[in-house]
Length: 291
Image (cartoon, rainbow, N blue to C red):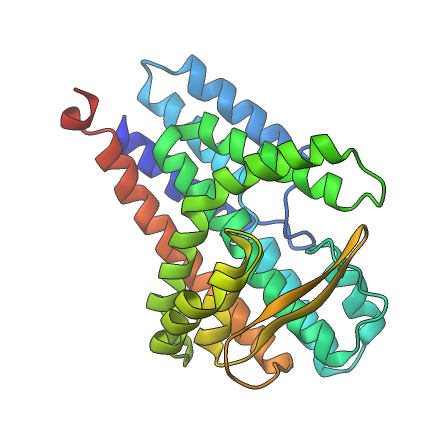
């Protein structure tokens, strides 16, 4: 079962790379990807004693949940728009990846937000589905994706139920506890490949994320900031609140080139996560683990 799950995860990553949605970084349950998740979970459940069907189920569910190709395409487009100073288009593109208000953001603010969005989505739509898929198979991917979708939907509503939002936020924090830390660790490992600094990524992750109000959100952003040797964080406006977030990293303000490098870093972290998830799938399903 473990080898089949690992193969399914890798097939899903390959499918996302080849036939990814190049317009959206976060898959929507109503789309073809949502249907793939549903069909994948069904195939996984029906194929309990059929290895090929379980591989297909895991592969479909993984492809449906992953947003790596879309995130890379959106991030690349944002970099081009920022480079050409087409800020109106950049605001619209950023709104697809992040719930923050973009109307008042200028060039520096948009660039900072773009790098933060690429970093955060690397964890939520790439590493987290793969990790939960390795641990719990197709049902784990379904659960993680559902929580993320509900949180994203609520975050974009100016008026929302506070008790419901609190429950969803706490659930999302739990679901993201391990993925964000894995993403940060992989960012440290991948930083030198994109011309970044592994030591600065490690330092920013350990030093700056502790001051962030969320137990998860600042960690990946801090690691990306250190890896790219730039400064992120600061005042962030959401539909229902304004947050004065801590400064992450100790470098200079980012420019459009850093958004491109963030996309490259995100891609590499995604592939490292895929390999790690495949190994974990085998380990978690070994006969010794099942005893």
